[in-house]
Length: 296
Image 1 (cartoon, rainbow, N blue to C red):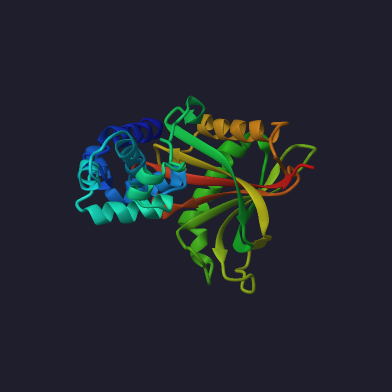
Image 2 (cartoon, rainbow, N blue to C red):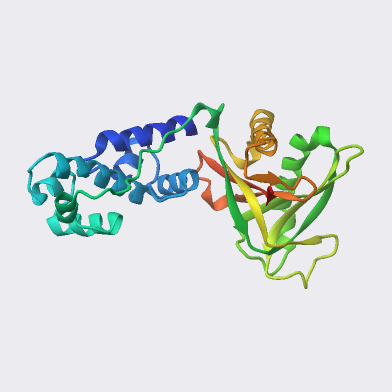
C-alpha cells in the first residue's frame, strides 16, 4: 500500500492523465485497492473539496482549449471529454463558469478555471502527510472526559496512552454524547515553570449538566482557529515521535511567521480531533486546532 503522500500525488497525476478517458473515483479506488468511499473521504479531507467535483472541474478546464482553438462542434468536444450527451456538458459548463460553451466561443470572455492541485515536499512526513493551516471558525462545543497532568518531556508517549485508555474504557461511562466516533484531546493549559500541561481526553456532549464522578467537563467557546490536517499510514494509536515532532514543527513555523496575517494565541488551549470512523485499516486522519487572532 502506498504512503499517503505518494497515494495522493499519484491520484492527482492519474486524474490529469485520465481527462477525457472517463476517469472517476471508482476507477481510481480500484487501481489503488481502496474502497471508493474511503478514497473520496481521504481526498476531501486532504484537499477540502470532493473528488468527483475536482475531476469534473479539471475536465471542463481542459475542454476550453478545444472550444477556443478548434472549430469542432460542441457535441464532439463533449464526447471527447467523457460526457455522454451535449446537454449534460453544457449544463456542467454553465454551472462551473456561469456561461455556456457556445457563449464562451462567441464572446471570448475570460473565465477562471480550477488549476491542478500540486503537492509539495514540505507536506511530506515519513509515512504521513500534513496540510494547513486553514483559518476556520470553530463553533462552541462541550466535552466531558478525564483530566491528566502530563510533563512536557513525556507528552508524546503519555498523551496517546491516556487517549487510548479513555477511548477503550472510560468514554463508555459518559451519557448524552454527540458524534460518538469523534475523540477530542484538549490541552487546557501549560505551566510556564516546568512546561507541563493539563490534557483532557474527552468526547463531545450535548451539555455539561450530567458529569460522572471523577470526570471533568469543558466548554470550548466559539473561536477563530488555525487548523492543520494530518494523514498517516498507521492506526491512531501509533502516532510516533517523528510524526508528532513534524506536526509541532509545522505549527511552530506558522506561529513564528512574521508575514502571516494571523498569530497563534499561545496562552489559550489547543486540541486534536480524531474521527475514528474515518480509519479504513490503512490511513488515519487527524485535525489539530489552535485559536488565532488577526494581527494589527
